[in-house]
Image 1 (cartoon, rainbow, N blue to C red):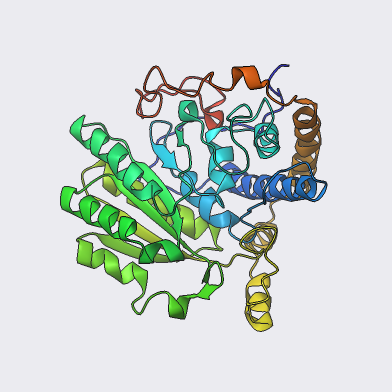
Image 2 (spheres, rainbow, N blue to C red):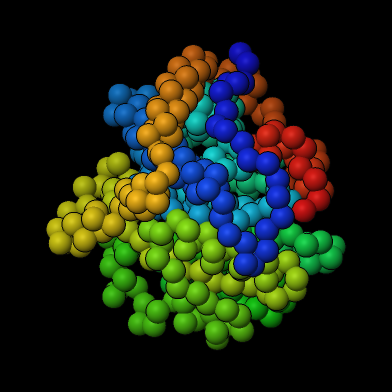
Length: 357
């Protein structure tokens, strides 16, 4: 069966610098990607409740601005080590909603073609590194990518996402330390969503994690993780700094996980007033209100996203389950598509091969 032909509207490539201002079209794209992320995850949750998604379901409701805003700052040649609540980054890199839904259902057509399910996926050809479930083990992987870029003298950046709970893990500290010592071109995105599963921030750390960046010898920045433009600006500046040898940056995005750790979690441990506080700061609603106050039309984006989801869902549901006889096919790489030379297609650039950026 053919790959879905329905694709989000594309952007043309352009150079960015630290002072880059988002255009009107850029801002509409930011909203569209957040809407697309939420709609895709809502559809996946619906399929889970119908028994079509095995295991559990993990989403990033309330955190859309973090992955969308940060990934929007990447160039085609950069590489992304994406966490399970950062679907927006996959979508920006070019993974379609249909492939995501097929992946969740363990079907052919998913990113791993049925060889894994749920959130363990990444498309190397699009610069997305497959997720390592033990958190924050993606941070050392991103350091390895950044080290390769540095040794090759390539102006490329590795970006990795992780939650607040990861900052209490030894792997996180090792990654931060080596990044600082080697001045690696890497951007660490800390999604502080207030809870490491059911453990609140005050029981996770005694010192704000963003302050730790200085002890490793590089910049730490705290941003409103529910403001997609603020996240983008911080990420763009960090990427620009990394590309010219300025070293790593830790960006702490303050946000809230508005659904449970997984679909099995009722969030009974969250005080109602905290949930209400963050519900009033929904990243999509607040950004759309801002655009509306500036006279920008957004209703068409909702319609386009809804139509896209219908087509992509129909395609995903039509995908067959994998043939067990093919289980070993495509498991072992014969070349290096992750580091690569950067010349892989990426949806934001109309599906064309990416040129050096």
